[in-house]
Structures are given as C-alpha cells and as structure tokens.
Length: 252
Ligand code: NDP
Image 1: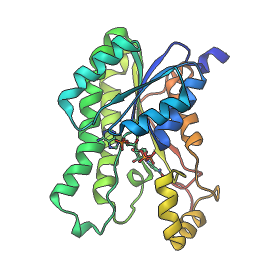
Image 2: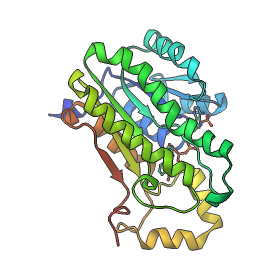
Image 3: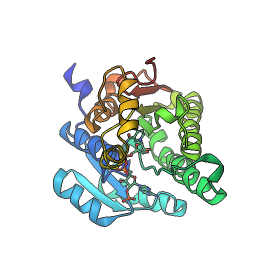
C-alpha cells in the first residue's frame, strides 16, 4: 500500500519550481524519492532551490513563454534526468488592477504565461509521455477560477481556461495512461501573498472570515495534494480540479 504513495524513480518537471508553491511541491516529491527538474527565469532563485533540495533537484533556466525552447528543454531533461512521468504546470504571474484599466498587452501577457504556454509545454511533454502509456499532468489553477474575485480579470480568465484544458485533455487522452488534473489553491502563505496581506489588513480579515478553516494555506498543504495526484494511488482520477483552500470555495 505504502509504495502506491511513493515517487521513487519517477521524474517530475515543475515549471516555476524555484519558489513558493512550486518549491514546496519539489521538496515533497524529492522527499518521496523523485528526481525533480525545476524551471524559472531567474538563475539565482533556481540555484538557491538546488542548494536547499540537493542532488535530486535539477535546474533549468527557461522562460515558459518562449515556446520555441520547449522541445529542447524537454529533450534535455529526458536525457539528463530521465523520462518525465509528472508535469506540474505551476509557473504563473499576476496582474492586479481595476479590470477596465487592463491593457490588451497586460491581458495578453497574463494569458500567454498562465495558459498559452501551459498548453504548448503540455503538448510537447505529451509526445514523450503518451507512447510510454504513463504520466500525470497537474496544472495549478486558483480560487479565481471557481468564484469571482475583483481586479484580476486576466488571471481569472487564464486560470479558468486551465480547467477547460484539463477536462478536454483528460477526455481525449486518459485512455493512453496519462492523467490530467488541476489543483485550485486557496490563499496560500507565499512570500508574495504575505507581503500583500501586510499592506492590506482589511483584506486579510475578509479572507480569513470567509475561510471555514480560519487560516491561510501553506505550500505544504498544496504539495500534499500534488503528491496524491502524481502518485499511483490516484491512478483512476483524471479530469478533476481539487481545491486546497480550507473550505474557501464552499464557505458562506
Ligand atoms: P511565486 O511567484 O513564488 O511563483 C511563481 C513562479 O513562476 C516563480 O518561481 C517564477 O520564477 C515562475 N515564473 C513566472 N513567470 C515565468 C515564466 N515566464 N517562465 C518560467 N517561470 C516563470 O508564486 P506562487 O508560488 O504563489 O505561485 C505558483 C502558482 O500558484 C501560480 O500559478 C499561481 O497563480 C498559483 N496560485 C498561487 C496562490 C497563492 O495564494 N500563492 C493561490 C492560487 C494559485 P521566475 O521569476 O524565476 O521566472
């Protein structure tokens, strides 16, 4: 039974794995025996992650929006780390401002990072995964895909599109042995989030008052869900979105 939860000898690719939620997932996967390739644009951040995570962490500088680099990235990881069995589409950006002030360029930028690039990279990885008849693709969505949040129109649009992509790919390709699921984290205590909360105590109170668990989530909370969806124990689960939110999406 225990081995169904293990990730020994599995290879994972986590985009944006150098910080926050992605780093938490990488740490959990490595603790369970996986080898993990993490990507990001900032080499300093990746090197710090490698120092913390050790030998089973492999770092690759890659901007996910540079779609013509995906093939080379995946090919290199397959050669240097091993056959990718888990893809975590985690890299994401935010743009918070009143919706009618969002420019086309800003909207496009968020969509390009948070959904267009996710599809492009997933398509590339699938070419390797599907013939091996085994794999788990996990995309990090958000509460912003489950209910309306003000001032994040592009972010909400992209994170909702991720759920459509997940269901569509799950319907089309789960028979190949590759599964597709999403995680919708609630309000998670990453550095970026805590900085925002510090400047806006009213918002902090509002979020906590409508979160049944009455706390913010941790990166570990999200990582445990990502372990479950990556491990063999969830072999019959595909096409779902798992909220990790202390009840935020169902609380009243
Ligand atoms: P972070 O900013 O810590 O993580 C985002 C990561 O994405 C960074 O490591 C960043 O690395 C990477 N990244 C951003 N743009 C690119 C790019 N173009 N190419 C490659 N990597 C990129 O934030 P979080 O950990 O909070 O966010 C992780 C995911 O979780 C995001 O998709 C976010 O939308 C989602 N999420 C977060 C919530 C929260 O409360 N924190 C709630 C719901 C969802 P670098 O700068 O080096 O490129």
